[in-house]
Length: 314
Image (tube, rainbow, N blue to C red; front, top):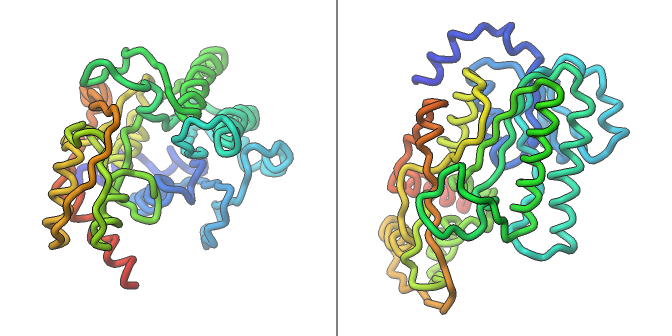
C-alpha cells in the first residue's frame, strides 16, 4: 500500500512514454510490468522474446541487433529513464557457448541500446552479487573488492564500469542494483537453489548439499526485488546498491522448512565441496533509497511453494 501511495504523488505526465524497460518478458520484467500497470505508470517494454502481449507499447527487439534498434528510433527518441533488465544469465565459468552469449547480450547489447537513447537522463542497471566472487568476509558492502568467478559476473561488472564512464561523459545519472539470488517465480531462475530444492522435495527426491549445508545467503523474494525498482522510480538516486533479502537461512534451514511445508520427509545427500557464506549488506539501500525487504524467508517459501503447486496441477 505504501508504494501505491508514493506513486500517486507522481503525475502520469512525468512518466508518459518516457520510461523504457528492457527484458520486459523476462524474470524480473514479467512481474515489474504487472506492477507498473497496477500503478498506472506508462512504459515501453522490449524483449527478445514475443510474449504475445496486447500492449501496444511492447516491442519484440534484439538489443544486440543494430538494425532493429534503428527501426525503432522514433520510439526511443523521447525516452529519459531506462530500467535495464535485459540479460543473458549464465552462472557457469565456461567461456564458450553460453558464456559468449552472456558477453554479447550484457555488454554489446547495452552499448548498442545507449547509442539509440539520445534523451536519456537516468539509468537503472540490474547487476548481481556475483560480481564480488567468493567473499572472504560477511556481510559484503558495496565497497568490497569485485573479483567475479563466472563469465556472467564478469560481464556484469564490465557493463557496470562502462555505464559509469558513459554516464559521466553524457551527464546521465546511473544506478546499479547488485541483486542477491531472486526466488519466487518457479517458471524462471531454474538454477536458483530454493527452486531446485522445491522441485526435488516435491518429487520425493533427496536434494544434494554441497559442503556441510551451513552456508548462508540472504535470498531475495521477487516482490521485494520489484519494490526496490519502484522505489527507485520515485527518487532515482544514483549509486551502487546491494539489494538482498530480509533473512539469511542456511541451505539446511531451507531444506528443513520446505520439507515441513510440503509434508515430506527428506534427508539431503552431502557432497564434499568448499562452500562459503554470502550475505549482502543492504544498509546503503536502506539509508539512501529507503528500501527494506518486507518478505521473510518463511512467507517467501510458502508463497513460492504455492505457485509451484498451482503450476504443477494446472
